[in-house]
Image (cartoon, rainbow, N blue to C red; front, top):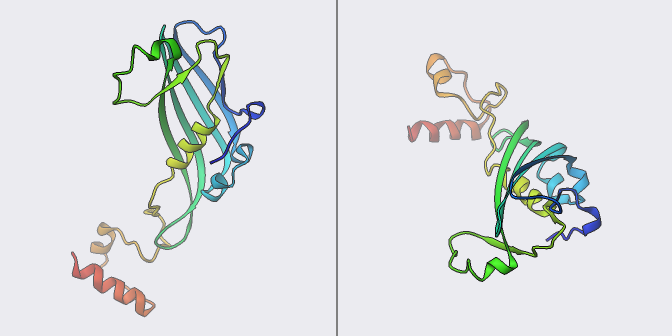
Length: 181
């Protein structure tokens, strides 16, 4: 777990002076600004855009984070480099301390307690987690003609005379693929 100090808050929403209503904030940073190697290892190396929507009422506040970033990944099948634009979203509910006793029956949603006199909220860690959760579990390149393992169904049927596989593992893989059609 990465602990961010309050002095280095990248994504901080100032609450002082916000009355009831909806507010939008836009932040731009890079993966290196987070100071976390997990982001760079996940493929984030370019600019990151974070949009924060705060909807404040008398006794609670909802914060919606939306992230957009490009990540340099590799195809799980052929290992070709792929640059993908990844989108993530995360919603957090804050309940003010004095209203928390009244809302104890809300077990179905995650609520965080916040002091009603808080000046700001640091959302840097939440944005980092949203970025990491936006990385897909499986990455494949469907439009890469150099990917020898993945052949689109329409392309395979149109080629009557398919070229023979270059190696024994490709031949075995082709046999397995044909076996389970």
